Length: 124
Image (cartoon, rainbow, N blue to C red; front, side):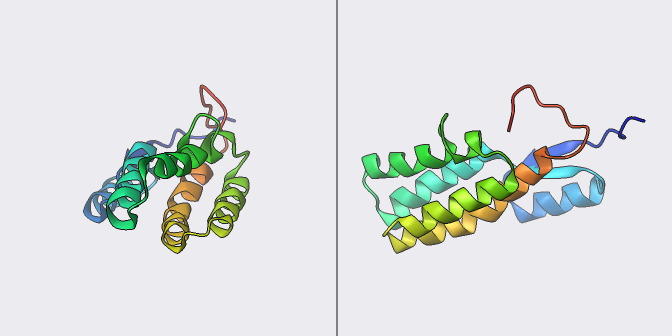
């Protein structure tokens, strides 16, 4: 027996939009747009933390890059572990806090991709 089709809805982390989607599509899986997370992470590292471009790019690549945590995490538990390890291994307290704040959204995205019956063009 096939699993019923459940839509996946993506958005940025804007609260009103997330609430509207939840009310309009209560059975839908919701994911936060990785592109928006990456942009927000980059802007925060630059504008609020004040990291130089090269160091900022290193953190972005470690998380979002082709060989980064998101691309190579085997499941949501692995991604959570890798993000926690990354946060703990950096000496910059502001970067640690930012990774800790962003991690739940990235882990929830990975959980959404692990649903039974979901077939992706490429692996998580």
